[in-house]
Length: 337
Image (cartoon, rainbow, N blue to C red; front, side, top):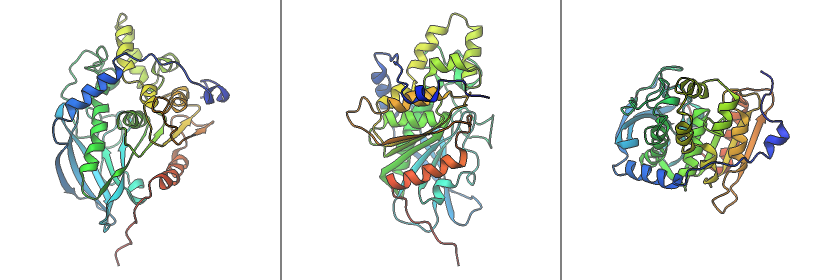
């Protein structure tokens, strides 16, 4: 697919107006306040991962409405001191999978929490373990359209709340330096990491690649690829629901979260991305931190000939180097013997 969004020079200065609901901040303040009424951790149980250099625990924490959310917590074996932590969010349709799947961050010396996606996990990867007990509101069959007609019922209200609570959960776990926690994700996970950056004022860093839910209305005009295509498909049947849907989506807009974020941020984007159009990532990057009164450290890496995969392993290496400067990781254990 050739480049289909704005030219690079326009993307680099793209700062679109954002139609924010007047109660945007109050909506999220009340949502998170309700979720925080109970202790965050439910259980932390050792999990067998088949690995000698990494220890893993099966964690359950309370997310939206106190619902149990599953996660894998991993850290380098044989390292006792508190470590900086990376909270990672999975992409659309994925669950947390198996505990040996995602080892990059723990091998770099970080404590690592991988959050399950409630009500997802059946499209890619190796499954999930977190149901969504609130998924009965009107909307399409896919998560992107569940509860679309009311922001209080929308799937992403619940998932974003879970993502914020995941930061509280990792801070409550043993062996974590609670002052050095980063949020990381690609695609849907990138959108969640960006939302967390806007909702958790003392987050230490955010690493965002190909973020979903950024520049939503423009993305719906540009692409029919899933997940945006699921929203379009729903509106193609429910022809009078457009304004209600736009109102709901305005509460989930990644550019609005970016404006409220103060943590150092590292972005990545493929300029031929037809899943999450690059103008959304640039809109979030260019307006990042503008409401905070600070000038947060930020950088973006663009890959002109890549699509939704972005920079792939090249981008991950850049993330490792950058986060190593922002958060000093801990030591990695030596092989036994």
